[in-house]
Length: 274
Image (cartoon, rainbow, N blue to C red; front, side):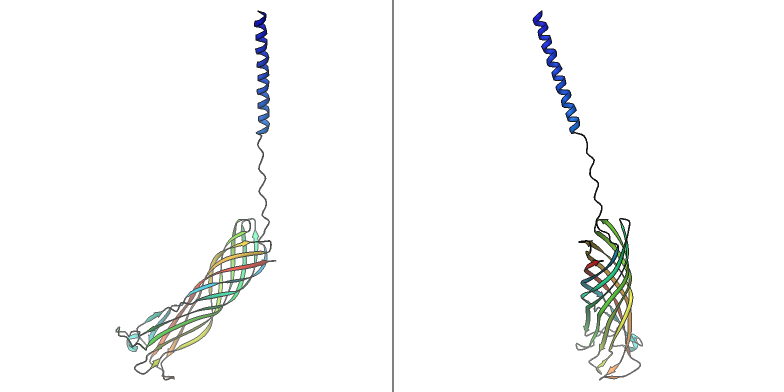
C-alpha cells in the first residue's frame, strides 16, 4: 500500500511539472507571434511645380500630297490629267523649350510650354512620262515635279499630366504650331513646244499640334522625356503660268498646285527645373 501511494505521488508530481512546462511554452510562443504594424510608405521627394528650360532632338516625317490640276479644265488643256504627287518630307529636328508646371495634389500636373527648333525636313516626288486625259504618255523627257521643305518649326501648347508614381509623369499636350515652308512644283512638256508651268515660293504657316509623352525626374532639377507630336499647318496653293523658253505665255493654259503640310514628330528631351 505504501508503494502504491509512492507511485501515485510520483505520477502526480510529473504531471504537474509537465503541465507547467507546456503552459510556459504557450506563453512564450504568444509573445513571439505578436504582429508588428508595417512602416508607412515614404512620401515622394519630388514635385513638378516650377519653371523649366531644356533642349530636344528627334525625327520627323510629313505628308505633303500635292494635287496638280490643269486649267481652264482637263478637256481643254488635254495634255495633263489631274494627278497627285507625294513629296513626303523626312528629316532631323532639334531645338529648345521653356515652360511652367503646377502640380495639384499628388496626381495632377497642369502646365504650358513653348518650343522652337530648326529642321531639315525635306522631300520631293517626280513622275516622268506622265499621261494626258486619254491615257497616252507625253514622252520619257516630260515630267511633273513637287518639292516641300520646312526650315524651322515652333509650338505653343498646354499640357495636362498624370503622376502614377513618384518622379514619373504621363502627359497629353496640344495647341498652336507654326513653321516656315518652301514649296515648288513644275509640269514640263519636252515636245511639242517645250512648255513648262513652274511655281516656287516660301510661306510662314500657322496651324495646330497635339500629342503626348512621358517625363521622368532623374534628380531634384533634371528630367528626361520622350514625346510624340502630330502637326497640321494646312494647305497652300499656287497657279503656274505657261512658260516657253523662259517667256510667260499667259491665258488660257495654267497648272494649279495644292500642297498639303502635315506630319509627325518623335523626339527626346532634357529639362532643368528651377
